[in-house]
Image (cartoon, rainbow, N blue to C red; front, side, top):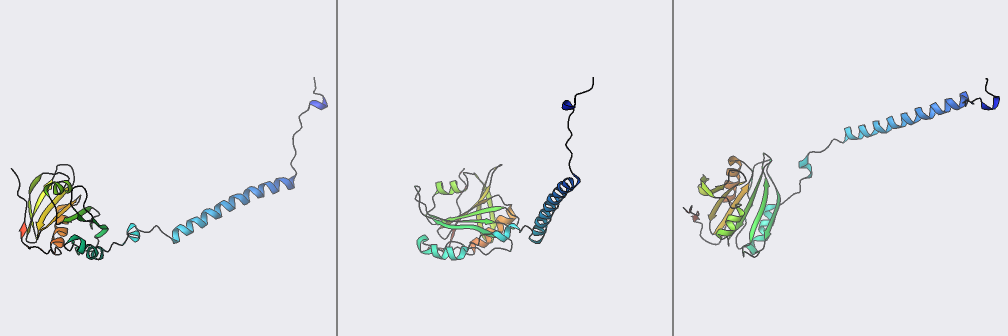
Amino acid sequence: MSESPQNIPVKPVIAAAAAKRANASIIGMLLAMLSTVAIVLVIVWLNPQQKAETYRQTVDVAAISAHAADTAGFTPSAPVLPEGWYANYARWNGAGTDGVAFWDVGFVTGANTFIALKQSSSANPTWTSTQAQNAPVTGTRNIAGHTWELRDKPKGDRSLVLTSGGVTTVLTGTADFKEFDVLAAATTKTVQSPTTSSDHVTKDAK
């Protein structure tokens, strides 16, 4: 049986002009998207991502040290280090519940590892041990005429400890011995104290 005229499905007919306009709109959108992407790529190419060191915060360790000297009672170390090293913080910390005020500087080495330098003229064994992360004494290292106490654990940071001229210095970090030696040598050149300059190294308690 043939379908009655009213039941015959009607297929929409798009005029040629309308179809052309629709195609043109789609093509226009695609071209606009491609243009946007191209502009973004050009901007990125002309402005490459800058290296991390470009954004380093400038820390004037020497200036902060000089400012802290009167409070500290000694001139905190501001070691001059090789190119590639930089400080990412430097501060004087007032005495806490342990009664120990101290100089605190963080250094990023040329190999991108880290060593913290801490100094105090009122250090006690508990404070020193805490700064060295309670690592045991495992030996000594002779660096630039000074004998530093070595403290380290199988897993964890290592530390070098020296008491010179009434000032105790603790270096702690992830760096290798070569970098520790560089910082230790530079630090001892800058230790200044109103007390005697003779060295004292804590003995390993057996």
